Image (cartoon, rainbow, N blue to C red; front, side, top):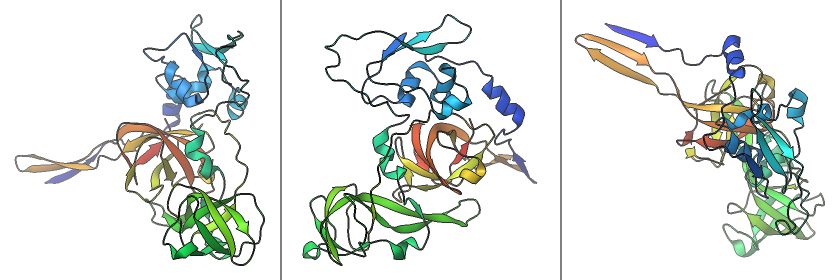
Length: 338
């Protein structure tokens, strides 16, 4: 006899969400009394110094919902003090003057929520594009000396370059993003390759590659590079339960790790917003248990192994940065509200 026994995989009731919201803040075992903000800090990184759950940073600051959308701006040189005098810990900025020798230059740029360098190319479009993008954007039709691929300093010839821009971004032609649950196409992704500047007019025009994260070649597309502003959203959990899956790992690889980009099969229409934090789970699958003549198949509960931070949202999909993980992230892994 074979019986199927399913564990309760995910608790998504309202009561569950409220109970989690009501949990007291847990300070990290080695939480410092204060921290001096330095260039390179992030809200997430500082939060991890004080809390066991970094995504609960807004609670440590006593932020309301509006403040979470536009959180305190924190700058290098400021001193953050942990106040444990009340019922719950609180973090505040101390008004002190640092010694001039510590910072010889005035630094006015607020620190970001998460590492800016990892996500900067994804803060501007395309990233997710319509199929018509393939026929409307400038394209590389040849490279200097017919090289298969070029890097920084290499030159190429681009057809359809009608706009004028100081800097261009280069993308690989779009590929479909397929929902691992429904198998339907959610959109098309374009992979960021680098930047270039135009050095000669014409059709084709001549460009020179400025930066490259991957090799660049014929058929790759260009778009004007927009001004990218620093993200000012603090990490926070969704106000309603949301469950989804990893639809793609950026770059087309099978697995990835910390500070990498993944695509979720949930977007704006599902309630996802900038700054949302989700827990990552690995589906443990089924196991067959034998005892005498009886066989029982158990569906094992998923195992939590990390967190994601959403930094860009489209209607049907969203991009997230992998934060803390204890194992590689793969397509179809589960994401859910903490």
